Image (tube, rainbow, N blue to C red; front, side, top):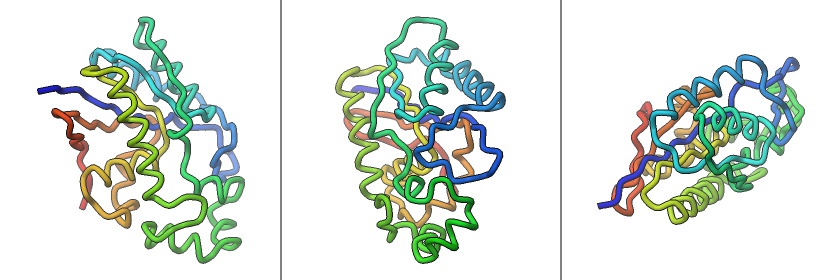
Length: 201
């Protein structure tokens, strides 16, 4: 039976002095974010990683490059657009959370309380589908190898919820596990993806 580990890494902390929704904006890592990426790399150094896949966003690319450097060996770094930030982040980018709530009250309320119903920017169903498409593509390209996917909080969380057969309305219940620089694990057992990261109920 085939077995492999899939590591979903959220990018490190970014420069965001105005505390805005950064969405698709090209924000860089700050010093703490770079340190978080190095720490993630130190953990992954022991995992015999076969390849790294990363969102095209500046913060995820920087995180992935630091991880690759920390691994201390040549390893393929592949950019995948379907690992990008959530569409709702793009919808509200450049705004503070208060401004987003004022400018888009209906959508912001849905995001906070019933995110499964949200359609603005991108539905959570479509987000999970694109994430799993990339993961399965990586598994096919690197069979039996442990892989790293560097992405963003909501895309990572909806992937875990989908695999765990949980409602997308639980998005905010589980967000504490996906702080900047965090690593979540999925195991590939045979052909089945199994979430190994604890999700609060």
